[in-house]
Length: 254
Image 1 (tube, rainbow, N blue to C red):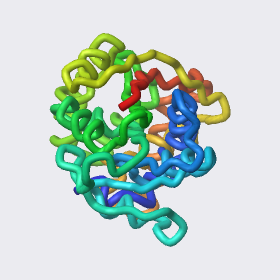
Image 2: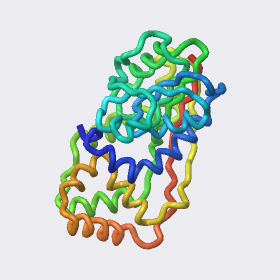
Image 3: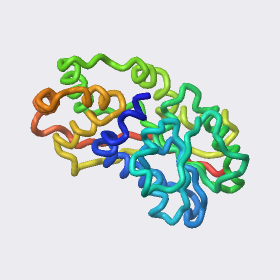
Image 4: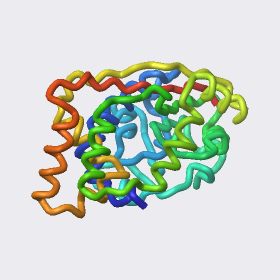
């Protein structure tokens, strides 16, 4: 699985973005998270876990990608492998759930939301985030083109997620529909989160560290990797627009 192969690359590139996104997500909690046992669903390399720790919560992590959970495992709270569609937890086992950009990988996020509701004790917060349909930046096409010129062939699983899974939560209306179909009372909001501190090289590193590209980049010898980066920077230009992630946040109480 690509996500298991790219844990270190993910944290070195996308990690800095997901740390900020996760902070924004947990800030939407309608209740105080301090002292609560909160499930970090699709925990990856621990962005939401760190955000929860910062608010005094007691996170437990679940992810289907073992390689992600192994990243910095010695310094992270308890974690286990698990499928969002069949969580390895009893009913009411946690006091809240945070799913930071994990449900948008699923072809049926409603099933996962029902599982989230099942394992959350009554009154616990349910927070999830996904990308909006207008989440775009020119670095994506620049890196994709540079990678293709270096021999990268698009990952079928990624194209399927982008075409079939991501749109299911990519608007307020679709996210709120998913909540209703999961019999969860809540709402969704659309927001834009800016990263003015990221320059062209950081933007390229972000994209090259993503799960669909990191395994390919790892196969390249150092000169080829350097050429790929230079070409991506050339295509992106010296003064790209500020990265602004367009996201949908789901907020509910179990």
